[in-house]
Image (cartoon, rainbow, N blue to C red; front, side, top):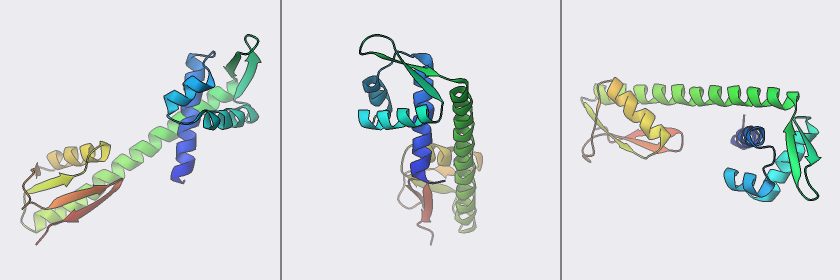
Length: 158
């Protein structure tokens, strides 16, 4: 699955969740919550309506009300499960990659490593290092796990 389709599914999941919690929410508010343009929200809503996941009714003269259908509830549940499964897959792959790198670090005679990067992947790296008994340091003499998005490379082994 491409990153683009993953982002689209995450947006649809978020839209369905927001609409379920507030059927009177407007597209501008949804756009702000998603961090996208109103046109993007409109495009996703039209797709959800075409799929039968959302129905629209007029609440007032200019105000729309979005209603999640049973199909929409099923779609939300499937998207949520898919999101969790993808997240755990990334978590498992990241941990295995770090374990593989730490084995190389140990084989080279080191018991310390630097982590260069931040965010969720860095947190997973740190936890894996602690679990594996590897000390995370900031000294430049230690080998480094370099994070680039979800990619992790090892540098500094001699």
